[in-house]
Image 1 (cartoon, rainbow, N blue to C red):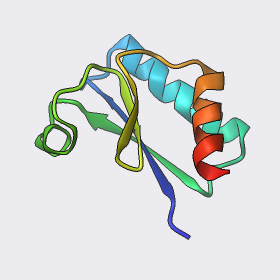
Image 2: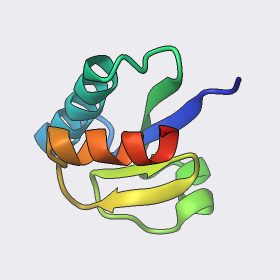
Image 3: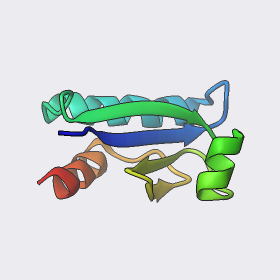
Image 4: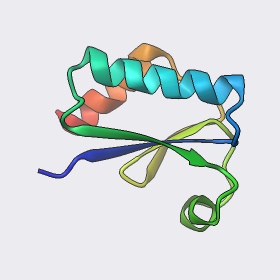
Length: 89
C-alpha cells in the first residue's frame, strides 16, 4: 500500500507559521496513529519543483497527494485531523 503524501509548503528557512503548520500536521498524524500510512515532507515554496507543480502559492500551504487543501494559514489540529480522516477513511 502506498503512503499518502502530505507536503507542507513554505519558505526556506521556515518562518514561524511554516514551522507551526509542519508541527500541526505531524501532531495530527501521530494522534491518529497514521505514521505507517502518511509521509509528511517540508517543501520549499520557491523551488522549481513546487512552482511547476502548483504555481504560485501563499505560505504556508498544505497539499495532500498533489492536491492543495490549505493555503496561507496555519491549520488547527482538528482541521488537519478531519482532512486526513476524509482522505484515509
